[in-house]
Amino acid sequence: MLEEGSLMLINNPEYLAVVDEIKARIAAARQRAMVAANTELVMLYWDVGHLINRHREWGNAFVPNLARDIRGSNPRLRGFSARNLASMQKLAEAYPDLQVLQTLSAKLTWSHMILLIEKAKDPIERAWYAEQSGSQSWSVRRLESALLDRTYHRQILAPKTTNFREQLGSPQANLAQDVLKDPYIFDFIDYRNGMVEREIEDELVGNIARLLIELGAGFAFVGEQYRVEIEGREYAIDLLFYHLKLRCYVVIELKAGDFKPEYAGKLNFYVSAVDDLIASDRDEPTIGILLCKSKAGLVAEYAFRGITSPIGVSEYRLFDKLPAEYEDLIPTAEDIEARIGLSLPGDDI
Image (cartoon, rainbow, N blue to C red; front, side):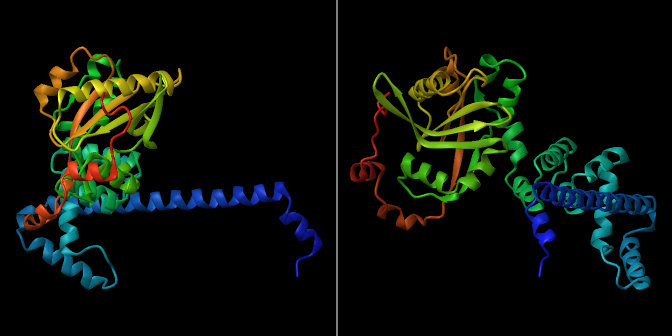
């Protein structure tokens, strides 16, 4: 049974604050201990790999023999198999600068390191994935997914059709350009022949967590079919986001088919409306992104000329698993629109 003084302490705000402070300090100490242990482990593995690399002349049998003898001297010791020893060699080769490795080991685990040295052969690409993993606290599984999806190539190397550099100041233009991917991979949506925009859009929102992962860090979902009223008439923006790093709203318009020049005008209309009616003076200019099955680069480039709103176009991919023999059983886009009445006010812009 608790004494009266104990009950008073439990309900005392100052006492509860002390409890929270102690719990926070314990958690922080544990985190520091984990970081220190991980750094020591990675440094040890680098030392071992560096030592092995100094004796390459001993031939192919050297590493298997070494693994066998290490295990023989301490059967309970884990992590020094021939495969892991080979990974340690690659670690020492990939990161000759110990200072760089020590900085990374404070943010990334050995499992992250193995993925980076095995899957990202180019040093610049590897450094990009390492920076993203550290700054965005990517799990090993999230890093593996990014490597498999070739996020670096889609976000950094892929040619992008935008007017960001012309319409945004530096460094906002560079940040916006880096945020855009091409193509976007929506492999969590099963493609069906004749899918219309609203169906794709609904499935994107229904899988919002995976959508936000694919869009990239910083995107916050605001709404689907977001209504804006202009001169007594309602218009619906397909998807509206706010980007925490860019500090601006992002309008996304989705098209089930290929890019058409008139899409640029409609996207410009929505971006301008958000700038005037939703964004505050503290926000950076709103950005528009048009997602199409095919972007027709030169056509898009011509369509963007003369438009002062910062807009861009990217392609997207869905997961196509429907057998060809069943495609004729799926209704066309026109059939679906006629059946459920998808037309919205403002679609004739």
